Image (cartoon, rainbow, N blue to C red; front, side, top):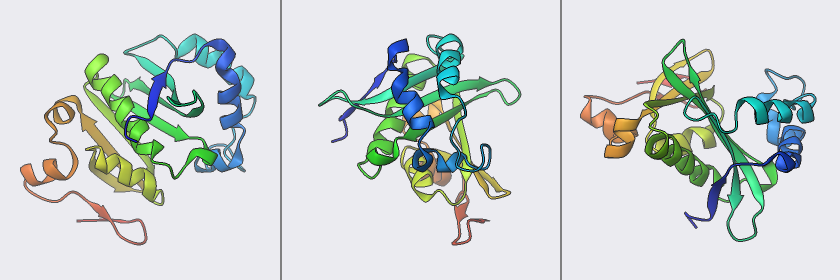
Length: 193
């Protein structure tokens, strides 16, 4: 099951899947604070043309790919990263198409993105932040070795360095090695030590 997916660099004609995901309210609900009321991206066809121009084939500055199931070739989500100049790290993202959730694809997709970023493209640090209410996202990041660096304003900030990833010393192990526990989330989504 852990090798059920592969990273797939989409061609222009594959944009139908991007548009389908970006137009699906259940898939995009996490995005609602930025694109009210349902998180869906307006004009996804236009956005897809921009993705082709500015994201695909731009490694290591930017990376974008679909997650594709090996067995039947079906697309199940997407992964990406891009360099954040103001912080000196790469921000990352992963979205699993809502009908494909609950099948372990989030963890598999994240591991594929990490392998691509750290082993192929030589990225130094990946960063992600999201709402503290997104328990599944939090747990797959922690299981992959991400270290929680902050919780503020209802958001949790996580990062993983290439060094920690390649050594297998991220997440909980890093917390033990560096003298203490990282923050955990209480039931209200607040950071606690």
